[in-house]
Length: 59
Picture 1 (tube, rainbow, N blue to C red):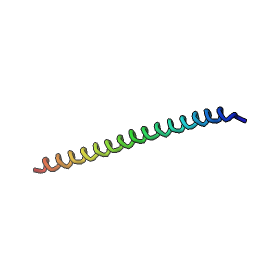
Picture 2: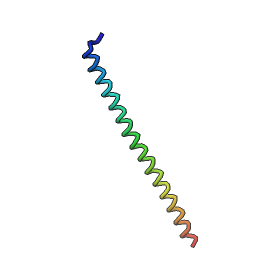
Picture 3: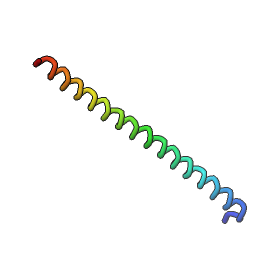
Picture 4: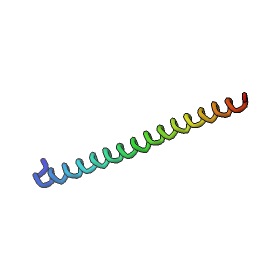
């Protein structure tokens, strides 16, 4: 059985690892969502450019 001090240090290490993983997951999620949003924006801009070119070619 672990001593109280050892258990506390193990708990601190485990908590640090868990918090570190959560922070990493949040950062990766933010990057991924930003990339998806910029991809959507690029698609919208491309579509708008296509419509603009189509309108200009018919005139």
